[in-house]
Length: 126
Image 1 (cartoon, rainbow, N blue to C red):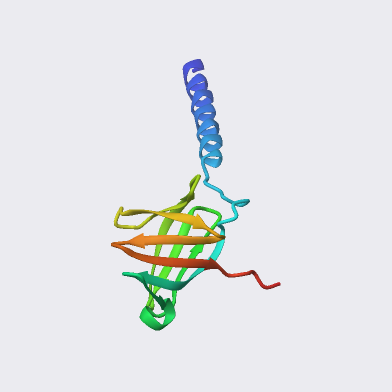
Image 2: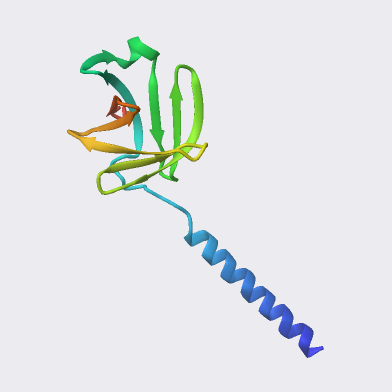
């Protein structure tokens, strides 16, 4: 009978340790300056700059505190992931493709196949 009591005690200890580990592993970027809504304002290709909205419609990213990135473009939306880097933001799409967005003059620059999208952070209204 003492063996069962010992096993239960060990089992409970393992459960408590797992809970502490899981609660400590949550990603949070609460204090990151990148958290918020970013809108692509311009698109540049072959030295020609266009309004992104005129070219493809609204291209928006919402970088959330938990590391999710809700990306919407031309009415399509998907939830990807992001993390801050020394140079800006690394965006990982659900298909596994990763892009590094560089911070330049308070704007995030995303380059895909020689096309540069410039994102500006939308100010929070209170």
